[in-house]
Length: 186
Image (cartoon, rainbow, N blue to C red; front, side, top):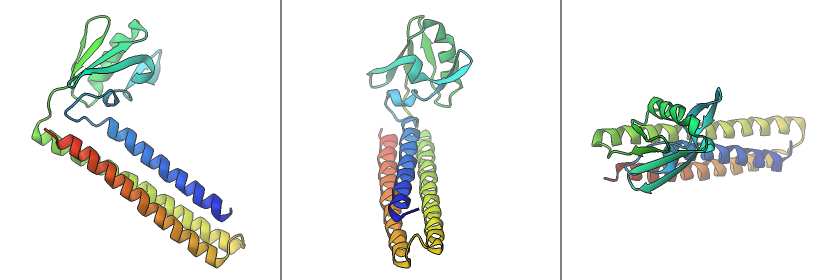
């Protein structure tokens, strides 16, 4: 596998790890209501777990309220059950046409817990990025043995991969700092 392919593949894998972290962060509750809070909740819809955003319209008309309007009114009960099962601690209010979710303010202790959860998710993303680096370095060593890469190319590739790792770790840290600040806002 040539130098460029190894580098591009590593970059793509690191980008996807960052994207996963971003999606995970959307599901962590802060003091205000956002559709991202519930859009990935899995709802049993015709015996298939389906993300809520695919079967309902989700909006935040007020800073502390979410409105969920299912495309299919028969799915109201399943949506309600899925929200209650989630660990968000929200009580759905069903009026037959829409579901209202009032997002209560977080206590100081709960904010610290959520910040710790965000930190753990960030560390998990960093570990996956480091695993990509390890795999790329192994591949570079193997390619050098096969004669596809020269020794200089191998070392340059390893340096470039390390720079990528540092760049993505900084992005992860920035995402975490932003999310942590959001969580700790009163």
